[in-house]
Image (cartoon, rainbow, N blue to C red):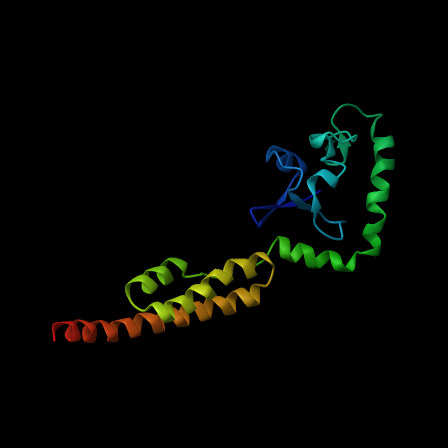
Amino acid sequence: MEYWVSINNNQEGPMSLDEVIALNPSADMLVWHPGMPDWDKASNLPELAHLFGGDFEEYVDGDTAENEPQPEPEQANDEPVQEPAPKAEEPQSQPRQAAAPAEPCPPNYLVWTVLVTVLCCVPLGVVSLIYSSQVKTKYNAGDIEGAKKASSRAELWLILAFVLGLIYQPFSVLFSLL
């Protein structure tokens, strides 16, 4: 089974259960896998509960790690968790798209925005800074179109701030000499 995890608001995956366990997840880490209607805390997943003092045994791709006879009682514990999945099968695609976006994150121009704001034009640079900070947030929320729009607006305001700064600087020097 494939899992996705949220680490510092970055969704990473797909990965196997062993890879998730190797991350040494905290009880509050958000995890999602096909069959879940929404993201949930790692401590609420039966296959990870043993890491947080839960009553469930460790699963390795659907089998227990210890021996063969144990899967039957644990599968019974898994069944209530899997029963709601068919009812919520259609909404599953939305969290999965948010978890593993198909497109890379658009550029946020944050470094250039800070430099232009400090060195050239503060008012327009601040506008670019606001849009730059929205790119990653929207991308992590699964709003790829919103991230692209924020990226293009950050770029526009960055260029405007740079050009206005280039125009303003010579006049600033000239007026300071007078």
